[in-house]
Structure formats: structure tokens, C-alpha cells
Image 1 (spheres, rainbow, N blue to C red):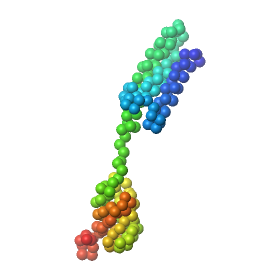
Image 2: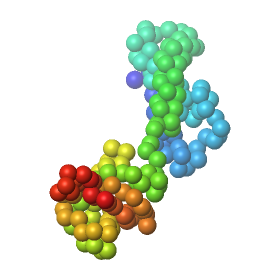
Image 3: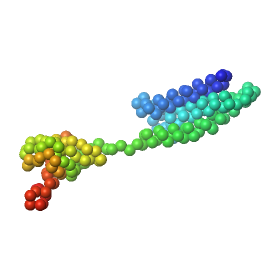
Image 4: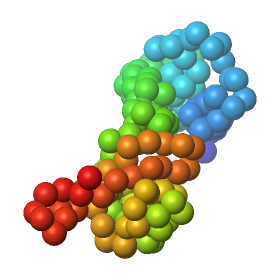
Length: 181
């Protein structure tokens, strides 16, 4: 392996290393300028450097021996052609990771009006457990009710006395055919 290939491989390795650090730990270590985005972001520059290095190394291995500077310039040109789409991909990947949708933290307003089912019997004035479906997730809460509710009773949340407990009423039909008060 000639010195040109080794130099381009070293540049490519540095670029990949910086790209990995930027994508995996950039927010933690505050790497790069915080307002830099797009083609001048750290991931884009690192992907570009890595592409130049590895593209240039590949060209150096495949090209016939050319006089001195011609080999380096041609390898550099091939490296830039390889690096541009890599940098664009890094910008897109970093943007996707940064702008990923997340579910907001639940508030008491999200729990009010939720429907669920009793999983541990709720004694009158005491606590039991209910399972509620909130934002597509099944969550368990401590539950109170004015009347005793056996396990399996469908319920509706009417109050949230604390972040981990709810006040519920039954939505099961009573013997007369209507919903329980």
C-alpha cells in the first residue's frame, strides 16, 4: 500500500470517528457550534472528511501510477465526488434524529376522562388499581371510588387527586339496564 492510500485512509478514519462522536454524543459534549446546521454542521463536515478520505483511498488503489501530484489531485477529486452525497445523508440523518417526535409527558388533564378497567378491587373510600389506556399505552394508577368496584369493572376517571392516583366511577350497566351513577 502506498503513502497516498494510507494518508487518505487516515483522513477517512478521522472523519468517521468524528461523525460517530457527533451523532452519538454531540449533544452531551457540546461539540461544534450550537447554531450550526445543515451543510456546516459537525456531522456534515465529518461525513464529508470521511468521504474524501475513503473515496480518495479507493481511487488511489484503483488508479494506475500517475506522475506525482496528478495522483493526489485525481484521488482528491474522486473523494469529493464520493463525499458530497455522504455529507447530505449525514445532514438528513442528524436532522431526523434531532427532530424525532416524542410523546409529551402526561399531565392530570390527559388522565381526566380516560377510560379503563379495575385490575385490583377498589373498596369504598379505599385504594385499588385501575389500568388506563393513555396515548396508546396501558398505565396502572392507584384508584379511589365512593362505591366498591370489583376487578374487571369498566371505569371513567373523574378526578386526579395526585400524579399517581385517580378518582373513578363505574361505567358498567347496573341491574336496571342503565349506567351506574
